[in-house]
Image (cartoon, rainbow, N blue to C red):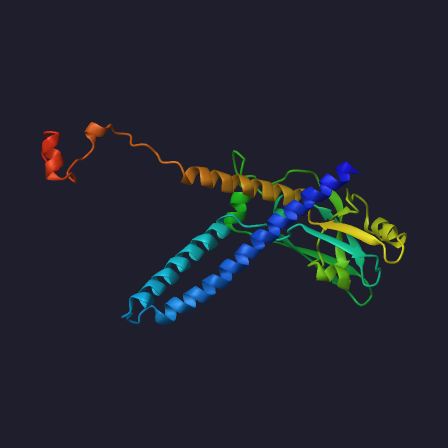
Length: 268
């Protein structure tokens, strides 16, 4: 029971981090649109009052900060399928699943999974892989050379959402989300087995789902964390000068300081 609780807490922690990152990204985009509009309209007008000048400078600084943050997100993208957690009461209406296969790559975390169902009930699953330099950086993080799609495992079966009901929709669950955990335990079965488990539950009983907390997403978040940690370490590191102090140019010294150390202030 303690292990089950710790597993749920770890999943919730990943989901909280993902939601916080998504929220910050949305706020940056909103601020970026608002600030760029402000700069475009008022940037060329003259400000006579000090308060107005300070306000414009503040807006421009915020604009540059947002631009920097957006460039950062472009270099360190989040997976398209972020982990989700949902506690819902048993309601079988409208909820269906279908079998799928994970190809064993990290790139799968950056893939959009689309599920279409025909009038005859035939289900078609399509996957569209996203490609960018930032995604390539995340996949190759920690690898001595380019790792292609980032193979970390062999092909494995999995279950995805084919259609959702209102309860799961309110938790942000969409078609194509991967069912990774059911009632606190990793789910390794098939779509029919999951449907059977739900059918055995009493009406109104609480069901606990975790979506997209699978190997591809977990490894993508781990490698992205490695990139961001390396970036912070590098940004705080200053490379020392290769030349000794006596070999550096001193033409920018004030004359009085130059006289004290008995050196000329002209360029060496």
